[in-house]
Length: 180
Image (cartoon, one colour):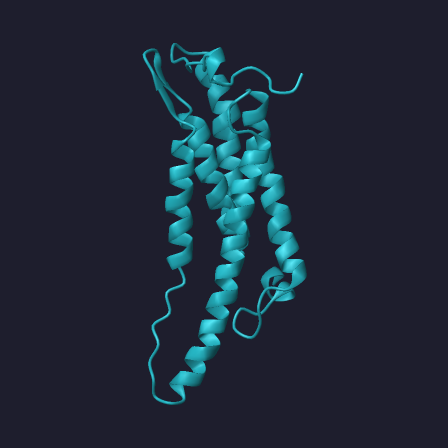
């Protein structure tokens, strides 16, 4: 029902309100993940997470525009007896690879260990949440956001009560507050 209020997938592209809803949900849910990283003084904080997620969300919305145009062209060509194969996922696949490369830049190996893996993972996850909201898959976006926030906060607190400890990043990696 909510989906039909904003746009009809075959007849038109997402409305301005649908785009604002998708970007707004991306802001709220990925913003929480970025805020958690910022509060832990990690290399990539709220701004980085939101920029990655907005880019992914925007690409997903653009992909929908492109797909809708391709569907319209396919219908026209079908009338002429020409078969067209539509592949909706190609642009999105490039986001997955590209953000993985970006996340690799947050990982640092030292003689004391490897740091930045969680930040790299949250950047990648932020992009996936942005893609989900951008494609209009609101339930998937919310579920991924809630689970990731639980993993980053509650599960980590539970682990601290056990013998399994999380290794803190050393100060020279940007673990100190940026703004004082």
